[in-house]
Image (tube, rainbow, N blue to C red; front, side, top):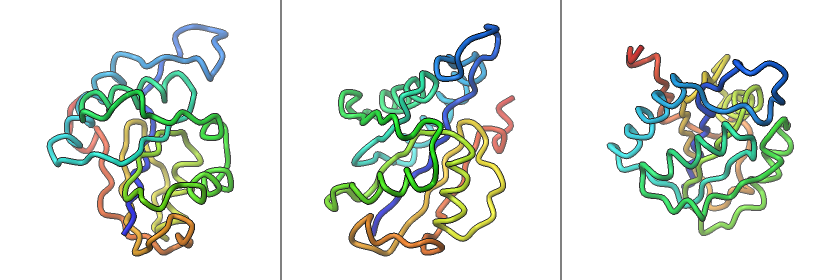
Length: 166
């Protein structure tokens, strides 16, 4: 069995005009949501074998904050350029390169690719994975290379607004 947790970065700031999209930081609400969602993971004892993250500032900050709260070694986060402004094909390629010893991974990334991944891998209609959401998909395979479209089962889809923390 393999599990993939698709995690969209927390809300980012648009306050600085002319700032490059890649460099946008988290905003106040994003930090609050991130703390809440990471503590939910911790409360359920969810800790991955590997965290993969986009190199965009907001994704890096999200991945590091989650890692800190769930007690995952921040130095072991794999930051990957191909998770920013990328495609389903690039994400799939990354999955195909993973070590079979890994059982569960977090992918901290961006829309629209995260939503496309969730839909294509599970066969579900997700429409949109909001900021700071977590979608957990389980696969009955021994290797990430063996994952096929529509083969995953969504175990949960959690997001801050679901809990009325606003």
